[in-house]
Length: 150
Image (cartoon, rainbow, N blue to C red; front, side, top):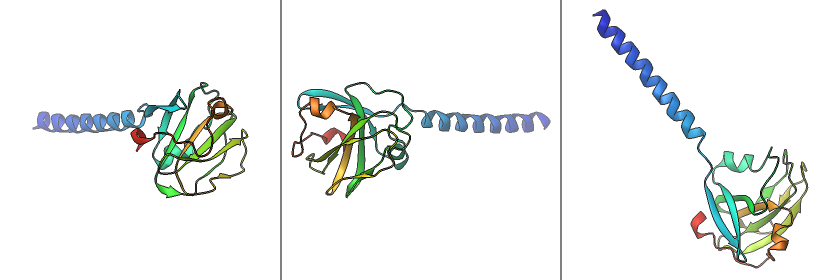
């Protein structure tokens, strides 16, 4: 009888350890990455879909590759607002509506707590190194294909 109790207790603890390991591995998954094309130039972006991913954004990073960035995806269109709290890298942000049309492009200052807000309703935002959009000739009114991000 003691043997059966030991097996059951040990089996239960193994089960708990397995569940814990699965939860930890799910939390440490690599971020979703996709490649966008900005006027023929590749842009490799991490996709921020969840509230916690969007809240963290590019905070606390020391560097960002020239043609890398982050795509923020929201469930529905709304006025979007971003700041640079704990963000070391000078960035540019493009606000994009549900159809992929760029509505605004702004430069942002490292560590600034000033809110940068879209002028209209948007569903997406892309943050990149400051100057990438200018070098890629991206302008308001341009269309970015975001079908794979939806």
